[in-house]
Amino acid sequence: METIFENHCTYTFSKYHQLKRTLLKQILVTGYVLILISLAFLIFGVYKDVGVLKGIGMLGIIFFAFRSILSPMWLAYSDTKRDRKMYKNHHMETLINFYDDHLLAVNALSGSKTNIKYADIQYVKKSSSLYIIGMEQNLVLLVDKKGFTKGTKEEFCEFIKEKCENAEVTI
Image (cartoon, rainbow, N blue to C red; front, side, top):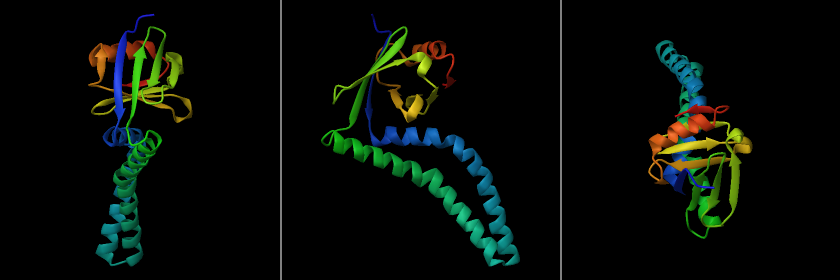
């Protein structure tokens, strides 16, 4: 069976950070509402000189900053550290071959293979340099937009939209 697309992706800190920020975006929508409420508490607390309101406002702002900025960085650092330990100070690399009815992801360092049918894909999202393919049990594959060795990212977008008709595709 002939491959339609081939992609190579190296899982660096930057790629993990994009992954975490993209997947946390939905949570951040509610965070924006909370930041507005926190700011209102803070402003009202300062205006009326009520310490409890100032404290609640500051806690809300600190929590939002942690959740939106520090948490994705910390999670990306953790994943990168895990990979470097597992692969003897190397970054994990995947080679993904897309066929007509499935895709085959091969870990370039361990040789392990994962065969995935398009019907098993739950979502496909994009970040600035990645397409993120998500399945059950938090299994995620990263497709590097610049990593195509066969096919182009524009052709890939059309292909994946067609093949993953049951998935949430936002690319």
